[in-house]
Length: 485
Ligand code: HEM
Image 1: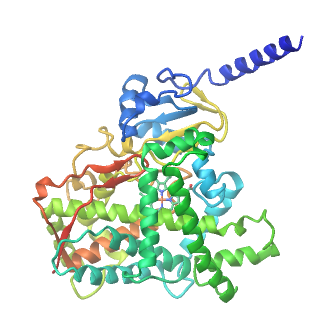
Image 2: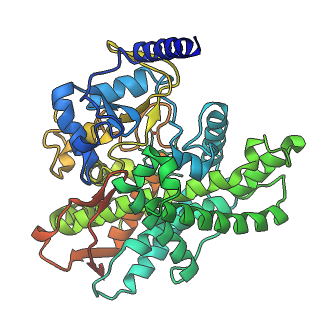
Image 3: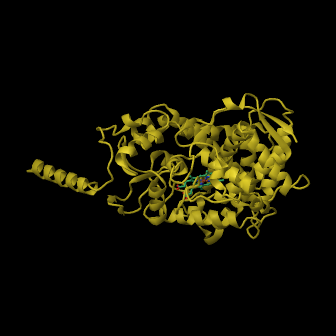
């Protein structure tokens, strides 16, 4: 009798489960345990997704090991999901790597009330910046001058700009968060930044994603995920040391930077020792600003420099516009941007082709969602492929070439393209979008106002293809020659 009861319950559960997933979007038939992994092997998973979508359409279901994932391809599907069904697609999946790193706090990996509060707090604090001694624009302008000085010291010898760009961008975040910057020869700081770079490189490799698919198994095995955890612990230690120093000196009525504002919030309501108080989890929030805000912008700058040495005539045209609008007597400001359509178009095109986060960060449905003719159950992982939007041939004339004309009209005025969404779109759109745009404009213009960049090899041989391409697209390493103008 017990066996019969057990079997009928199992049958009911299986039937319920198959009804729940009966109207999922179509996709390739999964194999037991490994799902469709054999169809998505190799280092560039999104290329396989694009191939599969030729058969299954722009909204399809793919099984990555035991994970059921809905993949969205092209401008229309991504826009419709993230903007028209904004709330339903605004979740983050509880992926084991996310859970291990951030425990559901901070903004990037959190959900529900935690996410809403932390996102609002971070946005407001960044927006109201200027309450301290500096505005964000001033911090970036000063850091751009430090970077020019550092690059001038290379005196025309071949130079890999990766670390200096990371240091410059990280210094902007450090100024905002801790009110401090670090010298370019600070080895400890360089070591921490190398940790972030390496972790993201490892994170970009499909092998690290095996932890998300089979966490119990990989918990006991050595592998790339262990390097990510080690780096995460070391970075938390770094932020803690800084933050504790601040906590001692905090004057609650005049917060000077992001961390002061955080501590002020923590003190309010005297909930300091309450583990339920989300502001007690400041480490996760500060660390994510540091990680999300450094590598993204510096990798885009690195890709941009590569483009500028590959296409010297584009660099010269940008410099001509800088000379006409800004000259050489003062530093570039954000107010110059609208008077510089060509430079603005070049920066947009760099971001489009850099295609920094090709598969976006994974989203999850927050409720059972009717989308087109499908029903996607609550909690399903969703990958809105930003690569497919930034290369949508319906919206970009020559999607695989570098062409600033994608952002210029016939009269040479700047023209926005709705498929320009390197920061994603909808409720989860990048929190640092305006900061990143400010950094890209001010760093590019200040550097090109003062310096000329050229390649150490024949520009025709420089490849724009990424050297790693999964979570982030990472440009090939290169060296350049820097000369004062
Ligand atoms: C999220 C891109 C710079 C902080 C994201 C997402 C993308 C992205 C694609 C995922 C959005 C989604 O899930 O739909 C970029 C690019 C950058 C950049 C291309 C630079 C060129 C920054 C900076 C910061 C930052 C400078 C920090 C100040 C964040 C945070 C999130 C996020 C906190 C999570 C938002 C949420 O889940 O609500 N970014 N980002 N990003 N970014 Fe950025």
